[in-house]
Length: 128
Image (cartoon, rainbow, N blue to C red; front, side, top):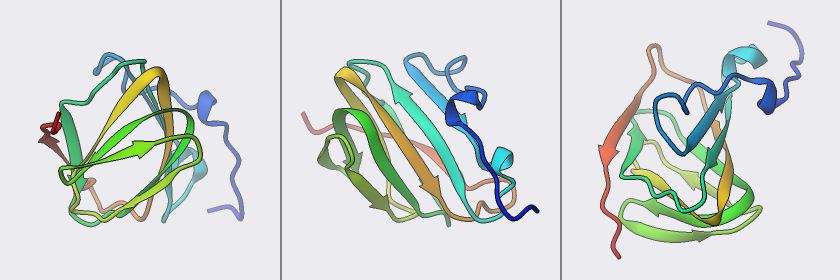
């Protein structure tokens, strides 16, 4: 492992949009050669609302709103999001995103990734 790494998230391959319409996801962990940090860029199209969220067994995450605005569903509670908000989410907490009319860009930062990953998709119901 080198003493530092440098990558532009827009240069990292989008591995999500081909599988999930209206979402772009770029995962930089391997490009950063990081053992303990995962950093990814998520872009949600205007008006997108997730029907599926996710949780983890071990990995805590923090999300930073880079641009746009929207809402985040966190264990059934809706949080309003705007630029530069940061939301930390414990591993087992279910989370999902909704973008408003300008879309939503979020950088996700995660801790050490267990062997084979630990993300689990979960259906969500928005309260409104």
